Image (cartoon, rainbow, N blue to C red):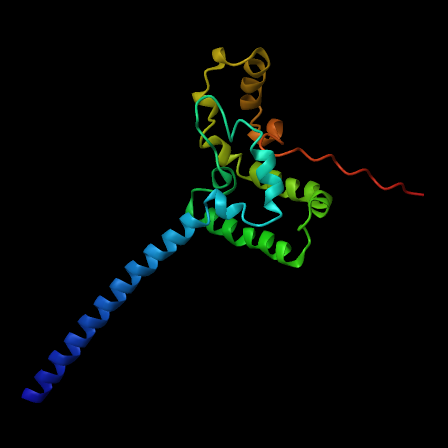
Length: 188
């Protein structure tokens, strides 16, 4: 009887210790996971691949990089969604860029340019599918002061809003050079 009670107490203590270890391991994993996500959202990380230097130089020439207000949109602001599931999908899909960097598919400016149209269209399609969610985290139609915009924007923004257009429908190439559509091959 005493042995059974002692065995039950020991089992209870071991269970409590295991729960504590699992809890602490969960906290550590969560912290490391969060740190990893934050690190891979840094512009320095995003542009560390040779092929992304092309994007970086173009980006440095835009208002998203340098402007009068000093507010800067970085790679992650435009390319990484805030909601968890879309963010994880974006992170997994970004692995293809690393894969193609390693394979040498886009490791020179010439190779990069040869694939620019397809890469840009994949990003634009993703942005349309999300109704330019990442753009709208900073540029929401309802928050725009149209009276402060130039005449063209004052006219076009309400129309785009009424038509349900995504930002990317009019602003493709706003942070990177807009690629020329490839010519159709001549068919005999």
